[in-house]
Image (cartoon, rainbow, N blue to C red; front, top):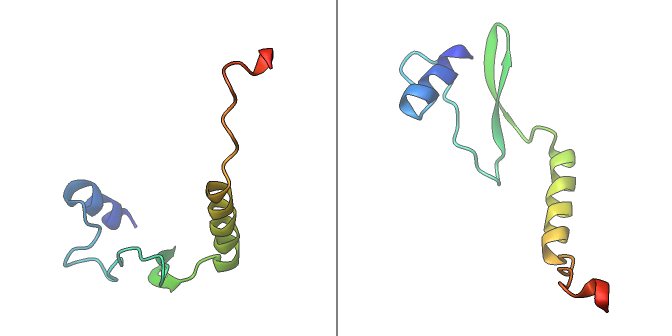
Length: 77
């Protein structure tokens, strides 16, 4: 894992010729992520899929129906 983070800090890309598994670019459709479980590294798909979908829906609902901004004169109304 240290190799990936070091590469990312120095080059902006976690992958290089020595990393065992290529860290995929994030895509909201495939939801690939890295799983580091010693001694292996693997690519997973859909980590906590249902939990993330719940938050995606909640944020979408909140941003679609924002609360009205309070009036500057509300205490006088």
